[in-house]
Image (tube, rainbow, N blue to C red):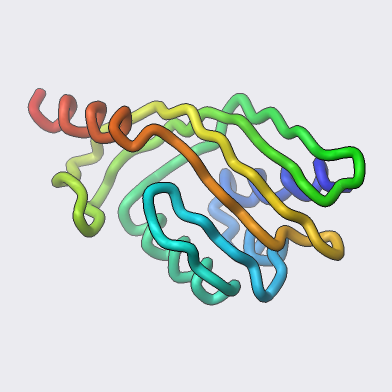
Length: 136
């Protein structure tokens, strides 16, 4: 059940189905943003998705999902293939630069929904790719 939930979450991501992603989350979801703050609640997650949609076009590929025996925790490893469309606050200028980035994500699951999402990737790797392609 937990693996199917995480698969559904990323299928919604790849489809740009933000309502489908939000449906996978508890109302009080905790979102730990890579190199950023901890956010609380579905509405904060909705605002995060809107910012991401504005600045990035991304697709999850090579998804591997792992779950604990009790189904209360899960993790995912995948590759993000993306394009940086519009400059995000505090980040370099954007001009559609493509990037490929390995990502790890960790989840807590409660009552069949995701109650915590924690994402990790190498920000310096992303910055290097974006800057190099901007200078090219």
